[in-house]
Amino acid sequence: MTLSPTGFLRIGDADLQYRMIGPSPEAAPTIVMLHEGLGCSELWGDFPDRLQAATGAGVFAYSRAGYGASSPAKLPRPLDYMQIEALEVLPKLLDAIGFRRGILLGHSDGGSIAAIYAGSLGDHRVRAVTLIAPHFIVENVSVASIAEIKTAYETTDLRARLARWHRNVDNAFYGWNGAWLDPQFRTWDISDYLAYIRVPIAIIQGAADQYGTLRQVEIAQEECYCPVDVTVLPGVGHSPHREAVDATLAISAEFYKAVMDIHEQPQGRAA
Image (cartoon, rainbow, N blue to C red; front, side, top):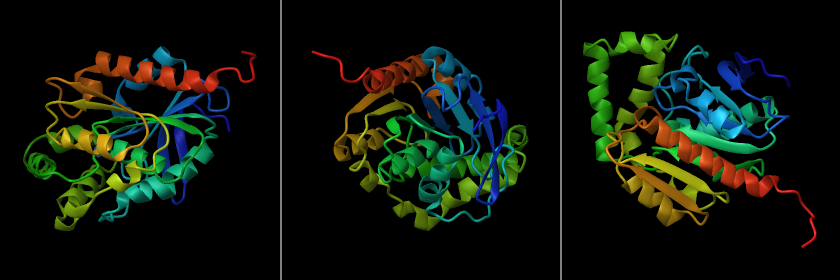
């Protein structure tokens, strides 16, 4: 299909907001961007545009249900909502945009969703995965920071600031916050998926991430059989693509080019 630069896709019973930068999926490899737990397609800022310029790839960013201008999600979210996104929604979305080859790039919750997808469906179209501050398990620091942000949402101007980006701001916030603060969510663990990923992974992690420690990186290194390239950025928190944009852009673009160059080499040349 031909994608407009912006619009909505009907996936299941939800209309999902999206941005498409650069060539369409049928014309070039595509980087599919999956946002964080309070993100959306627009909250990536100009990072998708800069990534497209640095790689020449098409870049597709979308807002999951409940975020941005997408349809609201049914609350409370089930505690396996990231597995549902990866196994039920994302496959339909990739088919809908005509995804042929490329990589998944996810931040935070989006990174977890990308890892689940890559470790479960064996999609040959996905040539690599870039994970920015992903979660594989729930840590004490995660729960403490998410509890703090709930207080901020209810007592400061945070709600008003988020409302600039989310049409249904309470749906976006409480859908994410409520799941993470549910006591039963403490046992959430997606590390088993990592052993089944068969494509290269790049992890970009802030050393000062307030939502997760380097234990998340260690889990990937322990569980994965595929190549795992790790970059830890000193003094950077949970959003390297905002706090250290040039470094994150350079790492992401270099990784993309390295993995795609392998696959885009002409086949059958004589030795």
